[in-house]
Amino acid sequence: MRRYVIFLVPVLLAAACGGVPYAGGGTSGRPAAGTAEEQATADARKTADNAGDKVYTARVWPARDLAHRAADLDGVEVMGVRGASTAGAGVALVVRVSGTGTKAGPYPGEPITVKRCFRMRFSTTTEWHEYETRLVTCPPGEPLRFEPWPKTPDIPSAKLQKVLPRVPAGGRADEAKVRAAVASLRLDPAISREFRTEGPVVGVVLKVRPYLSDAFDCVLARVAPGRTSVWSPARIQRMPGEGGCSAGNAVDPMPPPH
Image 1: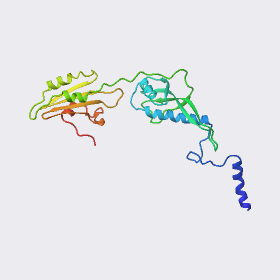
Image 2 (image 1 turned 120 degrees about the vertical axis):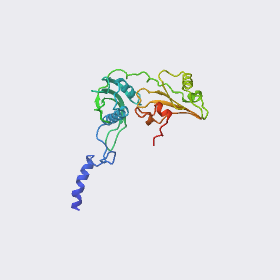
Image 3 (image 1 turned 180 degrees about the horizontal axis):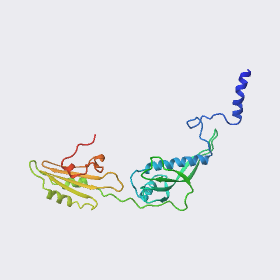
Image 4 (image 1 turned 60 degrees about the horizontal axis):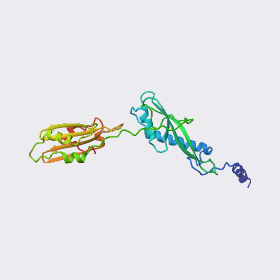
């Protein structure tokens, strides 16, 4: 009986001090330590880092565009921005986000929600999810406001299909007539036009690059004896250097990507 008393006394003492392990969250089987406010601040930091993951880019972006992209995210307010672009020293953003937490322990209280500001840095050398996120005092004033993003003009593929000439089998497409058909659409000046004739076939490319997009928007047309086709290549083929938005691809289409 004495053996059992020796082992039970420490357990009873631990229980009296509130030290019995609690089967709550966390990988250790215990809830994370801290006050409700500390927990809420930690939650806000996670929200800030997740927002950083969504605006992360290895490309050179102007500072204002990076801030604009962050401000478009739900629950994120941009309170300040420093730097010219993500090149070189990069851009420092101050974002304000919310976090929720409860007091750690076996008897957590009511959850509280706080707003916290974090300074984050982005550059072309920044690693994903590594933004030097630091808790800072929120700057005074309202969040930054941004004008709407530049609108990308639509390429009217259905109208293009209607106006392009049809060439009978055994005939020959006339580039002048194809050009006239495209001109009748009165396209937005931002949409470039390219034509190429090879043998009896005329290829057409209508192309525009959306603001800050990696891929072009383009519509191709192939006017050939017996058939006039209009289509848009797959996104991977519309990336710069892939040749999907070229007149050569309009005349002699490449197969779809696997």
